[in-house]
Image 1 (cartoon, rainbow, N blue to C red):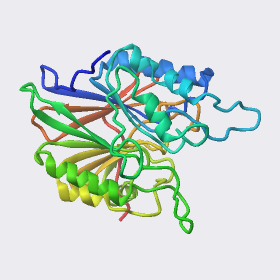
Image 2 (cartoon, rainbow, N blue to C red; image 1 turned 90 degrees about the horizontal axis):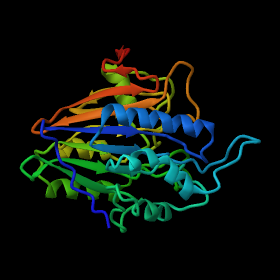
Image 3 (cartoon, one colour; image 1 turned 60 degrees about the horizontal axis):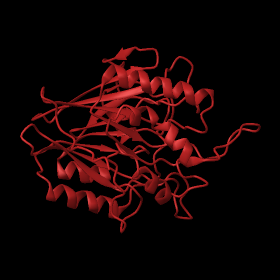
Image 4 (cartoon, rainbow, N blue to C red; image 1 turned 30 degrees about the horizontal axis):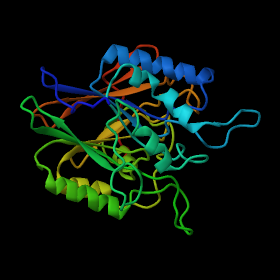
Length: 313
């Protein structure tokens, strides 16, 4: 049985993460093959230490008239992660709203995920909301924990009858995070990953200078459940990363935390003319509470400096 080695900073004291988001893999059709080629090219160019899929890896929802739907979600998922598995790169995920819309439950999909040799995903506690709330540690060169990665299941749609819209990260998940943070070394930097953006993603765009593009509304939950406030209070998270909104890719810093969108990766879903699919790259340096981030696009372009957006006050 293959045993996954612990995540560890490289000899040059860097740790590089590729964020793929919103693949929307269905069945291997032409658009899926474009997604696969993009992932292969990004992975070969960047050689990351870890890949994080921030939700909607597969698409199990309704399709346009005449289009075949996903009929085998487990096969779709196998195909969606094949580029990473074949390269034996450790990978982690959080679920999105479309991964388990029909045909399969979150727990069923998670059970399959855990069987992959190179995943570092964890199912997480069974007594809190969602499937896949967990924390990973990155070891320093001395073998001690040097950074932490938090993963949250941001759900799908509101289950409260009088509230319409997307779900929110629940209070029991936030309590789990604060307890994990208290038990960890608080001075260690941490990153957080989830699918649906927090309401603060709208706030940061409106209030501070951001870098990148906003071509659609921030499709967050209608309820602010307080995860961002908890992160500010804990003082460990220096960056958050989400997907969900396919033609937003900006980042901005609010109260000491950089809120970042990924760059949508999948071709089997809506996009915008001239807005190429791609991936967000993240690089931590051992002993530093900051990180670098850049985009690598399908055409090979690397974008290190995204366009500046100033708020209209």
